[in-house]
Image (cartoon, rainbow, N blue to C red; front, side):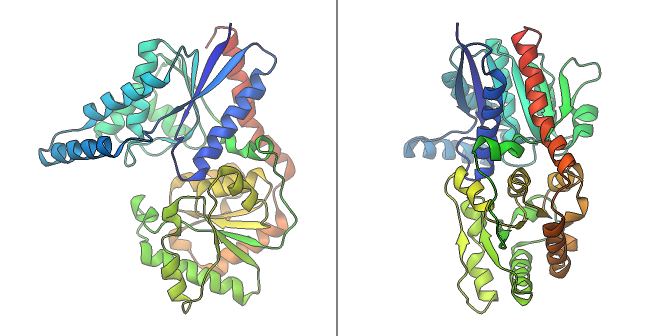
Length: 384
């Protein structure tokens, strides 16, 4: 009898890093399950997609009316999401939440996705695994955070692994004595080179990853769009002064290119060339052509790591700092108040010379695969 495994993720996301996570997670599960039985692999979209114009307008009007009446919309949103998930889940035997920034509540409404899916998994008695999730903050007094905490402690949730903040996960979110399996592991995208079968190319071009102007402010860092524009203009100027070849790129999100006209004006209206991939494979192929990367998006750094391309991280969220610590190169990750372009380019040149320590690189990557193999064995034995 075939067993159905559903991979739940942000399938409609324009930031291609999220799509790389999905592909990498499914690829590692397929590898772990190969030769162990008959399996059907399906995907579940945590987001709504392809809604008709009328349905979008109706939902927007309802949200506006709730806001005007100062009514909490959470129950309404959860009801919509649960119906959305029930329609997608057909005779599932296992649900894998593929990772990314999932355990958070301050913005994007991701806590509602998790709460709704865990409710449906419990309703249908489908074991659920949360794989290599980002953990972004905790607050005893925030109702959204506490709703998320309650969901994570349901018995249907069999495993929660994180790519970053294991202390907050274990000490804040998980209740004492809970039976759920927790661990810290690498993001599955560290294997994207194998999953997509892409290797780095010999190059002398540095990649500079652009990011949207409001991302620092959204994450409680006092560095607005004007600061971001100034920084990129200064970085480009520094690269050119040193006669270092560079290529601007994005992770695919349209918002990450919105500041380009302002950066061009800062550079005397010079036209800038930007690679903006529209597909996940194209993003990995783009990064594979660089000798070293300077980027704010976490998965620009993780994909670089997978390809053995050194990277310099521009920190807008603690997850970048934690990634730098985990891979053994914290000095390559800069907070916004450390954005001195000379020091950043110095760090990029040094990283380009040093690369990664090979054994450490392999050992860190291996945590992603070892965890999945462990959980697969437990599931197949009926012990999950």
